[in-house]
Length: 81
Image: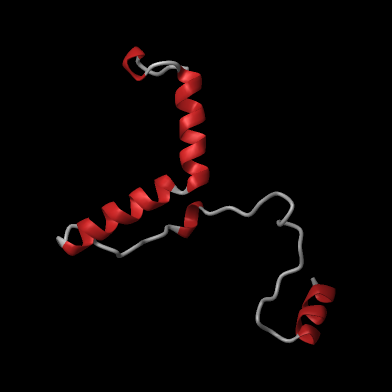
């Protein structure tokens, strides 16, 4: 609703955006732009993720997890602490 007046009615723009999203227009546009930039050597495809900011969802925090050890060792450790 905060669009500049030059774009017209916000509701029309919203409906167009939703329709284009459903039709895959934005995905096609992104693919085209990425392909063009990649061919020109303008994209560095290296991705770095800082895991220190990744958090588990509140419902996943209490789920049992596999630590890579055997189940017997995990049970013994859990019983001794």
